[in-house]
Length: 395
Image 1 (tube, rainbow, N blue to C red):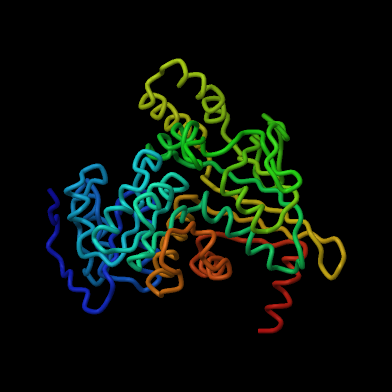
Image 2: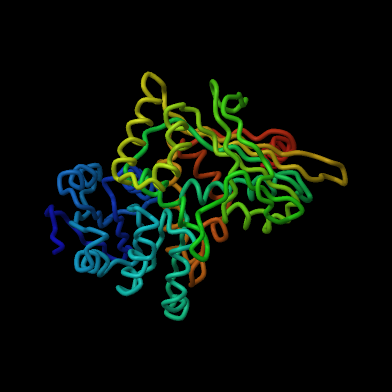
């Protein structure tokens, strides 16, 4: 059963009630801070550990937040948590096991929902149940770092000094702790996460001539890239989000690389499909992935990088625009995108229905927030750098 774990002033007046599920986790706690920075108070914080929720609530100087025990796998508890909320921000997983569970509970309670993950499986489940637009409700999925920001930043880049875009090369990855939820989702993504029951993406595939081409690229196990410190492994990987991005930007060519700076994690990931096929316990493999991430991180500072180079034309001439994002954590990037999606829904900037965050969030708003709140350092190059200088001069 759901229960309040603290006695606090939960009166929201005319303010919308935002429920944050998984509020004491790595993403949820950061999302609560991002929501407060956007001016949202009187939050309902949900999770399974009372003491951890109380610690998050105590960060609210006004003392208006409410903590409620909630478990995404317990229907009664989830129903009680969502009841009375205007919108629910879901920060729990595993994503491909929960699918649309949280969003469906929010809709049943008459609330909107933003999910920092969800992806194609959740969208398919929700539309099979009936489009939420008929009840005036909005669901925003994939409102995280990857997927989410990984498609928003190239869209922002496309508007910086280029008249048209034809090719994109992306490198995304970093060195940071691996949460249990991320570890389980990574394994589940090998067989789910994409559209129509497919895997989340396809290794070695790329876009050529505007369409997916299998085995178009090769893995580099030990190399260097200027945006990443030290030696790294580059794994070509084409996801459904990346394919949709190529279509949206009219790209002829797209090369996407997941970057693995840590040798322990990379070695385990290489063996993971075979170990799962051999019947190894997924929970044990997840624990090993967590330990491998800690081993790679030992004595080093965590970081996360997204590096994009977009080719096209400017004033009728060939041109390139680049952007490198550096952050201390992908978890905070995810929290920022999720909070911005909640804010956009509450401002009625996103229409009713089921959407992916990259299709409905304003890239300029996202970039301004990341910069103004110190979430990440963003360095444009080429045509993008020139476009920013012109804009600053105009201001």
